[in-house]
Structures are given as structure tokens and as C-alpha cells.
Length: 212
Image 1: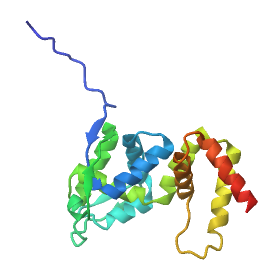
Image 2 (image 1 turned 120 degrees about the vertical axis):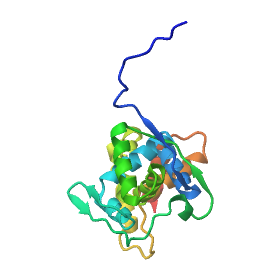
Image 3 (image 1 turned 90 degrees about the vertical axis):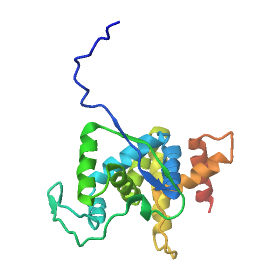
Image 4 (image 1 turned 90 degrees about the horizontal axis):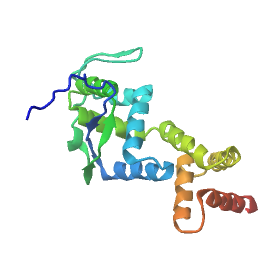
């Protein structure tokens, strides 16, 4: 029986899988963001990478390992063989695991250029980008805050931000509290109860703060 051969060109927007090896701690963090935002883990990881690729400070951090030249928007990084060599998964301490992320063909090409500059594989470059992006508080906070608009009204979000602002003002402790920290705490409280919704958990917590 003769098989029909499709003459259709491959879709330009077809997604490509990348499976970087990351530390268990990073995976747990991404899983937590996934739980908070109700986004699949692979979607969270994809967005972290895409946002990280846009941020100058993220690329600046990665650039300390560039072996070859690289363009980022209007910034040109010269080839520098004197930079510390990026070791990829070998540099990860402790337990590690793979995570599967799907990228558009266009973004995959950008990852290829980043990997070329680092003189490493696309999967290793993706893991490094994911790590650097997840360390950027603005990126993580923005992802979480955007998702909160689907679950909380504007007044509640504003109240939560005011609480974070109060905690951080003249904070005698070294660690600063972020919006993400607060949401993560509230999610922990919600998990202790099978009756409350997230909105209810936030309301109860805010009421408790007002009585202090």
C-alpha cells in the first residue's frame, strides 16, 4: 500500500522540547510558583526563561561566563576566553533532575545563540537562564502578581502590597520580604484548611493584621 507524502511545510510556530538539568531546589521553587499561579510547571519555566532573556541584569550575570561574543538588544559582549568556563550540570551541587520546557522555534534560536556564547549545549544554557531568571525578584513577583489578579480583586492585592511595604520598612532583619514570600505563606495556610478558598484565606489573614 502506498503511503501519502505530505508536502506541507513544517509549522514555524512548532514548539521544541528542551530538557535542562537543574537542582532539586530550583525545581521545587518552580513547582511552588506553579502551585501559586495555577500554571503548569513547563509554562512557568518557559515564562521565566523568556522574561529572563529580556532582562539586562540577568544577561549581565550570565555574561561573566561568555566565551564568545553575544548581542543582547543594543549591548554587545566581546569574546572573552579569560572568563570562567561554564560547567553546566556539573556545577550543580546536591540532587538534580531534568525539567521539560517547550519553546517556540524563534525563542529556541535565541537559546542557541546564548549557548554558543557560553560554549555549551542549548539544554545547559537553558538551565542557567532558568536559574538566573528565578533569582530575579522582579520577574518572579510580576508573574505571581499577574496571576493574583485572576483570584483576587484589586483592593485585596493593594492591601497585600501595603502589608509587604510595612514589613520591609525599617525591617531589623537582613532578609527582605517579597510579595511572593507573602503569597507563598498564605498558600501554606490555605493548605491547612479544606474549607477555605484563597480569597477567604487572604481575608482572614488581613483581618488578623488589622487587629494587631
